[in-house]
Length: 378
Ligand SMILES: NC(=O)c1ccc[n+]([C@@H]2O[C@H](COP(=O)([O-])OP(=O)(O)OC[C@H]3O[C@@H](n4cnc5c(N)ncnc54)[C@H](O)[C@@H]3O)[C@@H](O)[C@H]2O)c1
Ligand SMILES: [Zn+2]
Ligand SMILES: [Zn+2]
Image (cartoon, rainbow, N blue to C red; front, side, top):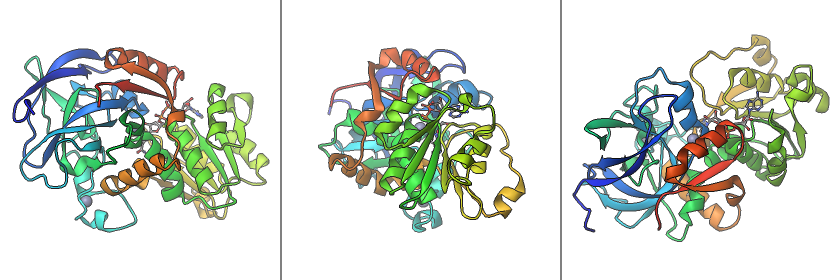
């Protein structure tokens, strides 16, 4: 290809500073260095964690940056030492790496990898290495991916090679939200057949958690959201009951406890609020209830009375649903291709990159589930 070994000039949505609209700029994307892969992004969706970075965790260093971490694309070129990926491969970039060699990768218990957060100690989810510049300034690569761009460069440990027939404008969702929610139910909570579950927050992550609870055989799935517009969609993924906390003047945990004779077996927090995390825990039944923190926030402490755990509840959390990206993402793509996993139903809007700020506004105002930005053709 004519671009191999050269700097590519292309469009990207740059976040110059927090709390400001993104700006479509021409950026320079360096050729991949050793163990790196340059990817032409075909489609990327907007996830709430992009908004968290832009509007909430604004004190952290990291701007200017290119956000975006839920995407799919085609490999344009590879750097020296890359063995498993070749130009032309269809891939999903991973915000949590899998080296396959560290003690975490070798354990079936977790998807944490020493290479996953290594360079940041987890703070910004963004390794300091960047291949992007714009107007003479270096742009940070959010979560090491930065998919709100026509091209990006990622480490080969952060690339999942997928079925060449997969439609990239759909399977991009597997790059974050769908694995995160689905895996939180099946891998982290380990939802059991016949159980009663509650999912708090019905964005794509929460709806994928509903889908996971349903796939695991839950008999009752209570969908909780302060935005009742979300309930219709939750039904599509298997929710059986719908609760809007605003309709009640007592704690939501009491409402759920009354509905379920003492509390749910499994609860999943997919809203990103420490208050909701506590409610989700308190909605679990004593003795064996399991509550999983999925929503993203690292700004406040989360608290609960010790008696909650002393009486037998378990409080857990997971990133990316506990899935090991390079191994499990291709399987999730296959599940979609085999019609065992829903994806199309999450996509409420398709927009060009130029309208990314509209996508962000819609998510802020609860007007979409996932907006897919169609960046380039396959
Ligand atoms: N752990 C991970 O690996 C991981 C990965 C991706 C996203 N996340 C996080 O998951 C969360 C959900 O992401 P999303 O993209 O689905 O977001 P979203 O904005 O589309 O959905 C969030 C939903 O939560 C609802 N909500 C807000 N406050 C609520 C409350 N008090 N009670 C009940 N519902 C409430 C909103 O109405 C909305 O429907 C975010 O915090 C995101 O950062 C975590
Ligand atoms: Zn995400
Ligand atoms: Zn590892």
